Image (cartoon, rainbow, N blue to C red; front, top):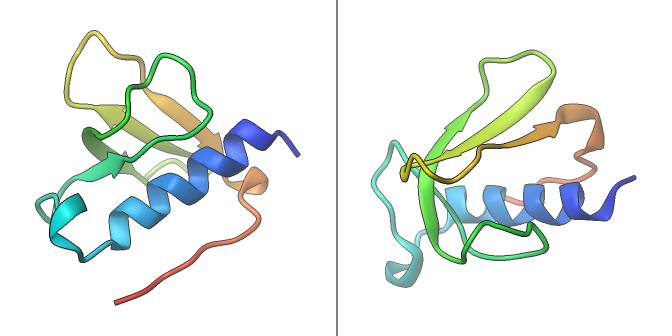
Length: 82
């Protein structure tokens, strides 16, 4: 298992379900809070796309930043909280 993919997946999913004011984004966005992905600054907002059958894709709002694609078979755990 590639550790950067695992860390990125947990961070992105955590950002999606976060209900705190510090990390709040509108209901159609996700936020990359930070982690091991080089070239993606902390607190990058964007959209999470689950329409692909093979990969989960995070696309930053700023066009100059590259999208992050995480194969579903590399995601080993998901956390959810209110």
